[in-house]
Image (cartoon, rainbow, N blue to C red; front, side, top):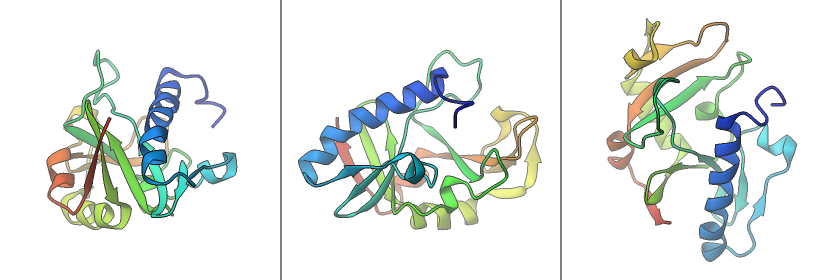
Length: 161
């Protein structure tokens, strides 16, 4: 994590987690923030309805000017070659959008991604990773892109900002 600490992406993720906290507090005043070791397990918060991993909006290509909320990167294997957040221990994933957060049970999302994503069909350019496997150069990760509309077709909650 120290390699990523203080990068613009890491800092943005930290800001979005802080933005999510008041929304969580309204629904569960006894929630708690995960400690450093728990965050390595893809857990940002503990709440009465389970563990939560908050995901900030992402760019599709590094050269993109802005983050967007119509497409989502999903991580099957992380950069160290270990289990990615999609296969992790978190109960709920909270995806940031412009005006809200979409919360979905991780196991529902994993099931849908296992059906929709053809990880054996590998691409070398991030813009081609929709439902296909993509590994960033020099890394051990295996990621793919899905549409937010796929998530919205599954049971979910929307929390307005």
